[in-house]
Image 1 (cartoon, helix red, strand yellow):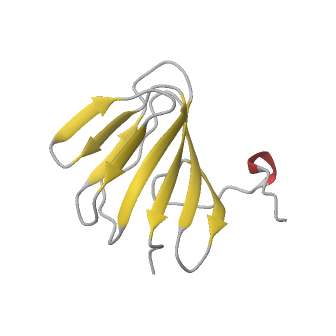
Image 2 (tube, helix red, strand yellow):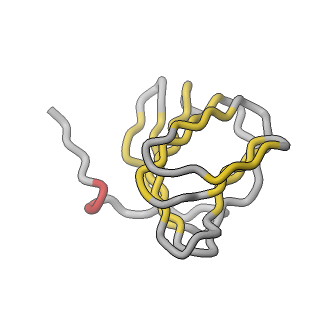
Length: 106
């Protein structure tokens, strides 16, 4: 059994300059744990694979294409491949979410 403790994983440098930890990787999938402090956000970008976001805490705003919505914990948001998307935190509390890429980007 392999157990990953998110609190013990190191954040990796990323163009968004936010706390991001790769917590799972296989040839078929990748999971990244992200933390957005108030005022932080991802830069709008596209991925070559389908992605979904699972919100763990807080109320981040998610933009996918022309759609924009504030979401809360225990929400799953689908983001199709090659559509611009971003997540940002306009609230006063920290937001945490998982980014799941299926299949994993090459």
